[in-house]
Length: 243
Ligand code: NAP
Image 1 (tube, rainbow, N blue to C red):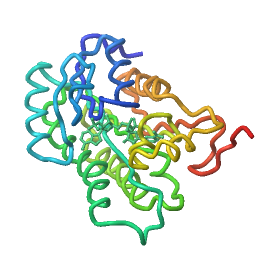
Image 2 (image 1 turned 90 degrees about the vertical axis):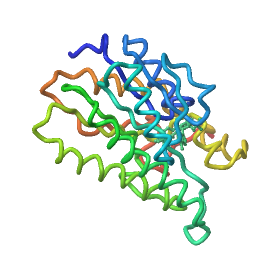
Image 3 (image 1 turned 135 degrees about the horizontal axis):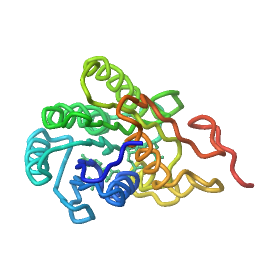
Image 4 (image 1 turned 90 degrees about the horizontal axis):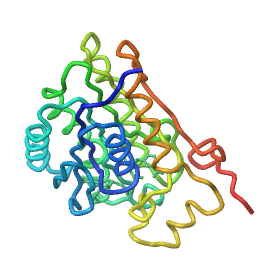
């Protein structure tokens, strides 16, 4: 098992949910973390920097500052992401499509392109995918498209990196209880709470454990993908709930 002590990491979307839990787990494993998010005041990372992954200039600034303060980079966790709405596609808007694709897809491409030149040998890129990137479900076309893109990008990048000492993994969770649904339903607490009603969802810390697992395999091993769901969930929409 490879140790993480003394390594450095960038975690995008570290101000909440899964990203915050990953940043904490890395810290607990003696990794120095630069966290990024638009709400930089909510970051509890060693280095806390404002980051909007939809903005190329913000990403460039963030990567330059983070790498300089960390003194090099071993791990990039592309976690920032969101969904907007649960409506049939004919209700979709240009603006929502742009926000979701810019954040979930372009943000991952951009941050990967900017961080790659700084990644030290033995480095690791972890992309936060979703089971939505493996199986479509209704009224989520743009989010599903974005997460299929993340999965496609991960595999394409794996081909380009083949032969280089850089690991690459997509971690694909099912239902995780975070602020995701609050954001998706634009602050509608009732709709957000209904998503997690009557089911013990995966916790952000559970996903963070998975990330630590993929990061600590021996150097000659690459976990290409890791899928983690609540025991009571088999597909994006098939969930057994308490009556
Ligand atoms: P969350 O609690 O809402 O956290 C989302 C994070 O992304 C926040 O830290 C947010 O920070 C950040 N973010 C959003 N837009 C950003 C931008 N333009 N620039 C920088 N950061 C941005 O939701 P979460 O569930 O932890 O989501 C994290 C990832 O897990 C996402 O990629 C999501 O698709 C994926 N995922 C979630 C679930 C689930 O059920 N929750 C399942 C599968 C996959 P700011 O708002 O402060 O910028």
